[in-house]
Each structure stands twice: as C-alpha cells, then as structure tokens.
Image (cartoon, rainbow, N blue to C red; front, top):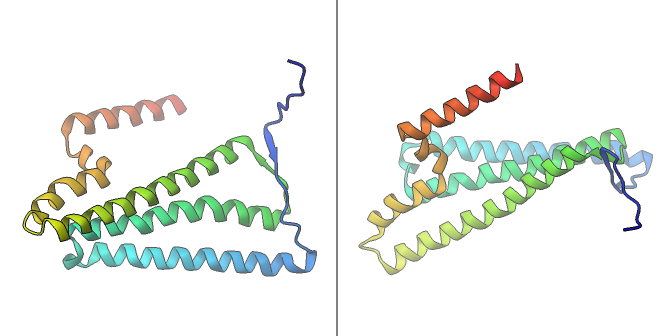
Length: 171
C-alpha cells in the first residue's frame, strides 16, 4: 500500500466562509436559535412532568421527542457556535466522533419514537378494547429501558458497581 496517511489528532473542516462583518450576526442568530430550541423543549418536558393528567403512555412517548431534540440540537449547535466564534477550521478527532455519535443517536431516536407513536395510534384505532393493556405493558419499558431496568435490583447493583469502578480508575 503506497499511500499517504494522516496521523493528526485533528480533523480539518471547511469553514462557513463568513465575511468578517457577518460573523457576529451569524453567531447571535445561531445562539438565539439554540436558546429558543432549549427553552421550548424544556417547557414541553416540564409541562408533561408536572401535569399529572399527562402521565399516560402517549405522553411518555411524546416526552422522548424533546429529550431527543435536545440531544440532536446540542450535538450540532455547540460545535457550530464554536466554529463561528473562533473561526477555527479544525476539530479534534474525539470531538468529531462524539458529535457524529450523538447526531446518529438523534436520528435513530427520532425514527424509533415516531415509529412508536405510529404503532400506538395503530393499536388505539385497530384494537381499541386491548389498547390499555398493550400500551401500559409494552410502551413504557421499550421507551425507557434504563429507568425500568434500574427497578430491578440486580441491574441496579451492576450499574452502581460499574460507575464506582470507573470513578476509582479515574482517581
């Protein structure tokens, strides 16, 4: 194999090619857009959490959409704002892989959540008498496996041991 290899710890990106006069307005516009996304999603999350009448399976599915949106928008906007503000054309390899990971998690999560919502409506329309049984038994554990998994004592103990071992290795 005769080729060139790059062993640099940074990835070189193409810049946004903004003229110097439009850097500040672009940064303000992107920051304002990110702040609006954060505000609206947090309002939706807190509304569903604080209103007891919204603690139904459909709203448990619905609360995952703003959480997923926060993951996706944070994965994109933080790096974009940094690149606009500092006019940098490089990003570390680990930051690039982390951003790609969270954007993929966002895309897969959005697909899964919307599919779950469609299945929920399908069950409600086609099997109305079985809807309560199916929606309370199937949807919550599949949407929040971490929460429902931590209810099991064995899993909770293993997760606690894992994090305690990880913290002790850092020190």
